[in-house]
Image (tube, one colour):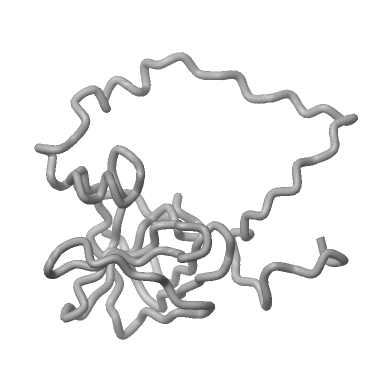
Length: 161
């Protein structure tokens, strides 16, 4: 992996934010059943950060002890999966979808293929829904998703939106 440095990310609502000062190691897609359940998806993309280079910048995650050795960190407010953690290890795994710029990290491997959904490779052959055409008369939907960058505070006051 080329050395891509410095990352930030967090949950969908912005209550939990983190930063990595350094590179991410072993970006991969895990297909195990535990990761499927934890992500609520067919797989979970993860990469490791040195614990010494990792810091929480807002809030604290909630934790679920998913096995004897592993706990999973998530936002207790919105439920976003954030971390796969082995507390005694010198690293923490971050969910790549929680990064502010997930496209910067391309998975280099897959693991636990025994649980991979057998038809997953066929997804590119499915019909594609057309993108909605912008309507100048429609009022934009006010979503409550935190922007993909650090903010001084969140949520903003009504007058700031």
